[in-house]
Length: 156
Image (cartoon, rainbow, N blue to C red; front, top):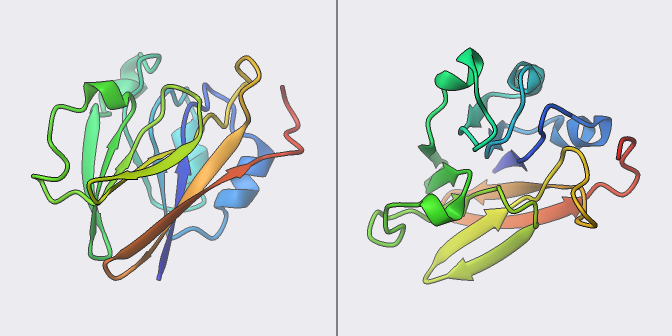
């Protein structure tokens, strides 16, 4: 069984609560709007796969791609910042999970056998949206996802 931490839209802020939640993960996926320095902090916790968000600019972000495909257990996962920019058919490509960010709205939904997960925003609060992270649990070809709101978030 693998536990994959999901985080998005940190915008340069890695909250202690998010760090604590991600501790012990087998891997971490960050779906963009990261902010300089955050990937190094996450890499101290687990191997990180990250994609570039619309606010990720500068030399550090030039190394990031807009989309990443990765195999986790027997599950093919696609990571992208803005789901509206997905240019492939996940069903046709055999993708089981699509992880995205951008909207800051946490959500887990399954359509046509594809699990879509947006862990929400773990960075500075936007409007009245929750501060949240997520996780994938992968056991062979079985996968489940959950969102966790970070109630006691220390920085607004």
